[in-house]
Each structure stands twice: as structure tokens, then as C-alpha cells.
Amino acid sequence: MKVTEGGPHAAEQLLVMLDEHSSWLVPVQYVNLMATLEWEEHPRPPIVKQILSHARDGQIRICRNRLGRPMGGSVLTGTAPEFVPRAEEPELYLHFLVTGREEARRSGIEALVTDARAEAARRGVRLLRTHCWAGEDGRLVREYEELGFTATLEFEELRSDGSYWPGRILQTRV
Image (cartoon, rainbow, N blue to C red):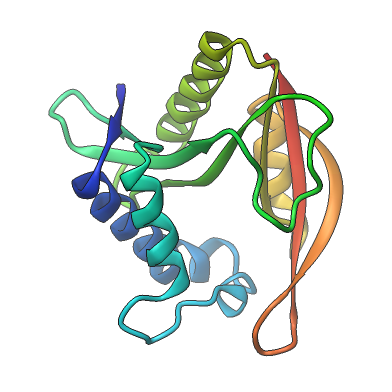
């Protein structure tokens, strides 16, 4: 597998994987997560705006198989989202970590996390953080822990409908 940086085409691929994740994987594996996602019906939902902005900044990473087919995607930035407490040291933050539904999920995620660690090392950054949904039985948090992350802070993000999205911040040292 090979991970590459991408622009507008990579943004489209990442959005397709996020959509597949929310419409296929979520109902099967994370039953309550589907209701927590804000896939608004506006022409440009907030998540689309975010992904396109990351594409303009060259922050999207796409993992491809040997045939060049996208297997997963993520966004790497030097800052955490607004709802995450700021780190006391330089960090690389891994956003939107997702795989395509037809591909080997674990190998795509592992390749993207390995790429993020290598990029952090290349930049001389020792802290790699991410966050994930922490609902149901915490299985998604445990999957990140199996990839070498340590769960740290729990948080709840207020959604537009007044409900809360339960999350967990995870980190690893490079």
C-alpha cells in the first residue's frame, strides 16, 4: 500500500469514503453512531467545506492498493479541531481517518496511521493525536488503542439539534 498527498480529486475520494462509512459501516458495526453524524442536506454541508479546505492546503492523505485504488483516507494538520484542548507542545493531528467499505479496513487504517507517524517524525513532532466516537461499548476507542494510541480525555460535542456527540481524544508518541 502507498499513501500519497492529494488535492481536489483526493477530497472527492475522501468524501465518498466518509459517505460510505456513514451509510454502510455505521449501521452494521456502530448502530448509534449514525444518528450522531451531521450529514446536512445543504448544497455544501460543513463537512464538505472542511474537506475542500484541507484539499486546498494539501493536507489530505489517500492510501492506495497496488492497483492505485483508494483504500482509505485521512487529513493531517498541525492543529487540533476547536473542540479539542490545545496540546502543550507541537503536534500533528489526524482527522477523518476512514477506509472504503470494499477494502481491507484494518490494513488501510494501519497504513494511514503509519504514514501519520512517519510525517510527524519528518517534521520533528513527537505528539500525534486524533479523536473518535466513544459511544456504545467503546469498541472504536479500543481499535485505536490496538494501533498504539492511548485514550486520554473524554468530551461531548454539542450538535445543532441540542444533543451531544460522545468522543475520546487519543494520542501516541513518535
